[in-house]
Image (cartoon, rainbow, N blue to C red; front, side):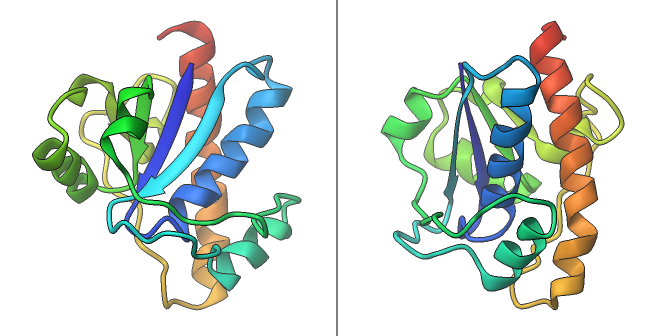
Length: 156
């Protein structure tokens, strides 16, 4: 199985969620799950933001090797589940890549548990914001990732 995390630039939210998911999947008996991230803006080769790197380092997750990439048809075709950060990401993917809409969910749809909440809200973009906002988002992303792992593990 392959899970793709998508945000706008692929320099903050999606790499944070993807690396946290990768780290926790290995400890949850889901080490066979392939994890990737990409952005709707098509930014190629940029590192994760300094604030994302610092916030994740504080919980032992290393983003220093991350380089951004854009979403494309091939990437989506080979992905089983796409986890996006906002409804605008869902809309962008639906407009540009209509196939596979049934395999796309908001990250925060897993905020309250392993059963996706269809009324979930998006995750605020922290780009350009102080480190404190990134730090505040880490436990929220972690909770969503943990519930997503339960969802995948138990086939909910």
